[in-house]
Amino acid sequence: MKTNVAGLIMSIIIGFYSVVVLPVYVRSIFEYGNFSSAEVAYVRNFTDKVMDAKKIDKKALSDFNLDVTSLKLLCEYSYYVDIKITEPTGDGGYTVRWIRQEASPGTELHSGDIFTLEIRPIEYSLFQRISMYMLGTVVDDYTVRRSVMIR
Image (cartoon, rainbow, N blue to C red; front, side, top):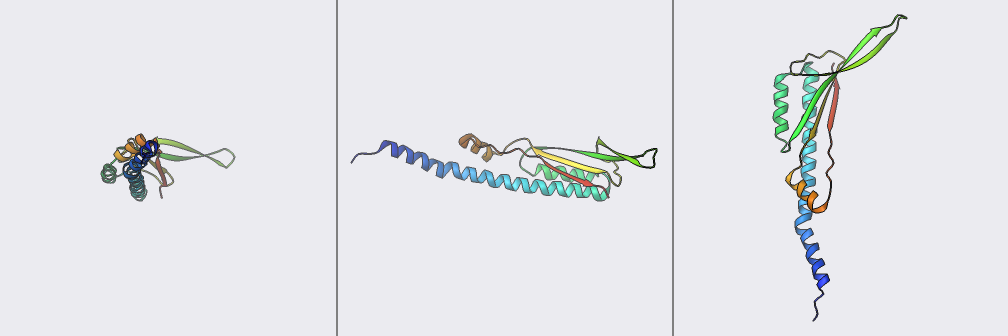
């Protein structure tokens, strides 16, 4: 009986991908989904706290930092405030301008200001890196951005 070498090599390659590569890729997809849903929840909680308190509270920021460190990926975030300035014109009307200002902990916010928080991952998980290397896939970098208007 003659052995088909090409068929044997293809079988080994398909078996390797089915047993090793595919589970790693599926695991990276699940990690990505868990990471992104947790990230959105943490952003929502922090922006809601800022909106209710009308300031960037140091305790809320500390809690947010703890939440971000629990994500298992290195992330960076930034936040800023868009301040609405209304100026009367000579003809009885008014003009509205928005000024973007970097915010810091303890910054007091006023009704009508828009607080925005952006967070983005700056690294990949182990399984994402392995699947990117073996399959040539690309995990989209994404930024979660949430804006709230101060009441």
